[in-house]
Figure: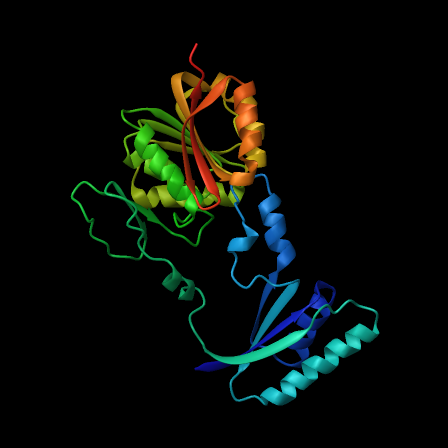
Length: 314
């Protein structure tokens, strides 16, 4: 079955009125909404979210509404009705923004699973591969460990540069059974990777209830039993010490983490920071130096930087 998709770019002030008009008066079968402000707010959360606006494809100027109709409707009539409605709302003093309308025919897919086509196996390294739960993947090497994920659950599918840099650093740092903490665990991918790479016990935390639930589900998929997941704010909700502390979160939140590192790190412990834009590196370096830490290794891919950190030598 085919559907007609009408995409409307406009100002956010007319979202409610236009949505009601599309559904109740024009009988839209469904509506998809994308707002620039939602992406900006997601990036400002103090949790595991990492949103880089430059990486988002076709980010709307303000509001993007896509309404779906049966394919045999009068397309020209619908578009003219929408234009008239927007003009009417402008007459009420609402800011309609820069308006543009486009149409196309699309297949009526199973929307619950259609997104899966965008996620595939990430054959990350000789040691690790990240596998969507529905994929039947055979390891490239006999000793290659598989991380199985449901990418629909939460942030952290393994595809982002910042996550992959952490995985590289973890393969360097995890050279024997160690205790580990994953701060801002998101989907749980780094905690699961730590278990697969030989960490003996792992505490994974996140401030988001959704992330905690998603991490637990992904841990079940991987049949690992040495990971504890709990809701917590950075390092403030635990008194334990660890051999490795991992944090792939925004630089401003990493700055909040630095003062508590020393009291949560075992002797000879190491820290892995990622999610650092190269422009933010100087303030991270300054804070680490002020708290008696030094950078042992630095990795950069495009604008993103990952650091392997240890205490300064006495």
